[in-house]
Length: 102
Image 1: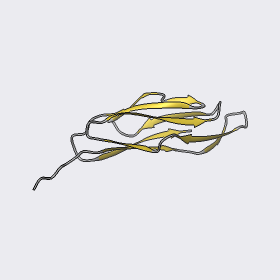
Image 2: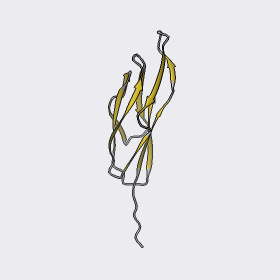
Image 3: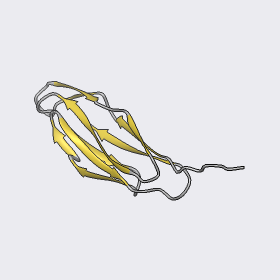
Image 4: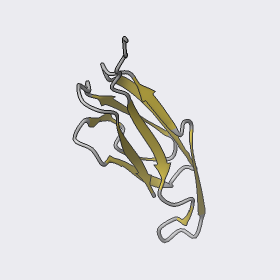
């Protein structure tokens, strides 16, 4: 019997908070993401997502796993792109998270 084993990588992308009031200016900020996650094969890879926010609304992105690296766009104001890489996986399936905090 032949059994194929595959090491799958799953990255979930989430917003920590949805509506916030801008610092000292009284404006409401609404946030959304262009993606809610990506599945990678055992070789890992690169991906990106867009944080959509009003001008003057600040956000930052951070990951929770050593095998996820945010390569650009870790923070911003208004709309911005977060790019990240995921390293190869030779072990069992794993999942990690990138949080876009506001």
